[in-house]
Figure 1 (spheres, each protein chain N blue to C red):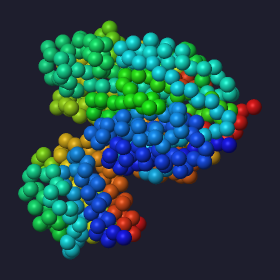
Figure 2: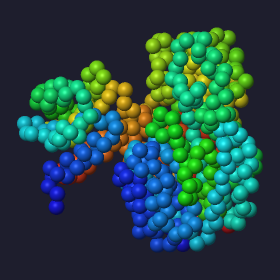
Figure 3: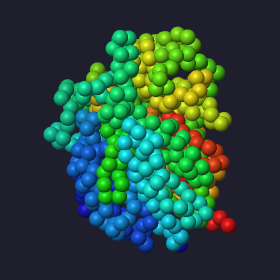
Figure 4: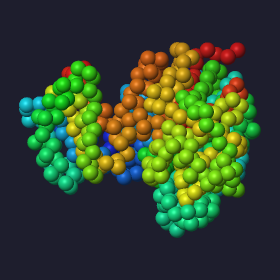
Length: 422
Length: 125
């Protein structure tokens, strides 16, 4: 017998919210959950703290229940769309094995963290395996306790700071989340499994994020929830962006493979502005949001991986993912493209048992109240089937069929079906 | 059972706990709106709020004219502040004041939830 339930709380106090979520799970599931996916907005940091929140959730659950999740910019479930509160998806199945594994210092030593995670995973007992990966998301880097702005006009300061970027990542673990490095390595270790990944964040400010590991609140970790069952499992990723026809050559790339110094043989910032026909005034603290609709993309296995210009320091432009391909395209998209990518991901979903989805946090930031259009599509597709979609700072899927799909701006769904594989 | 007014004020109270909701009310054309106590507001520039209240009738003239075209929201910037109208129906709107540089998309989701809650209380579809 399979059961899934979605619980949530809109309470402000961390303890009250945790308790309400835990009680909600208890009320809705007839059996003790095999696992709980738990996500909350960053608010509880100021309203009692996440340990209090997690303690309250766990108090309502049977001892030893695997609870995995973390902080997100928002979430959507059967009840609505929210940028404040907490929500959980709990699952029980007669024939299901669940394991949880963790590796720390993901930003400093991603491969080591992956090795630790993988070493904690038991052999698969059922036909299919779904890995829900929760990675600590990117954080604005710090230098001597100061977080610089997303844009620095001075060439001298900008270029100098960009050259010391890796120090912040190594010593303070503040900087990019390195998901592309983590997940590319993960899939070499488990090429026959299916995976959906989310990176935790705050309210799109990228200052702090937390991860939930059963009773513990952790940071800078990679957590795997490994779910083995005989259920059919489909994973989909899309972003809805379209090529503009503009292609660029990255002609000078820093050793971290992220700082683009020169594009088309010209200083990266000036060339980017020229290509997009943007005035210099656009290089301000809203660059993250602006570049969202005009991201770069690199092509791999037929999938265009979009990434945005997260930082512009001096003449250097920062790619949120390592560049493995120096030939890039410029994409563009609109709000309606965002919505249509959602329907594309849901297009072949029919009578699922549950849906867990992950979307780029900037999508909800840009859609605002129009995010309810996504909610309408999901409700029309799955009806009352339990679903939970989280808005995060990095999201991806992997399946042997479609390979690894990640990028900024994406929507990803893991759909579980009743059909038992023979 | 809480009265309609109490229920709406409770919903507004919840919205006002959001850091960047500096002031909020449900304005009604030709009637006194549902206005939380000033102590709940974080808006320091009171003149913005006073002017807004005094000119509300003019706003509803516009809102009602565009109502048939499906007017849903109205935004306008006042220096460091932004005033946001979420239309409930032709004669009623949720009005919030937020910082001009607020994380608007995320806030909008919660303003939408507030509007939905108010509609539910009022039995408006």
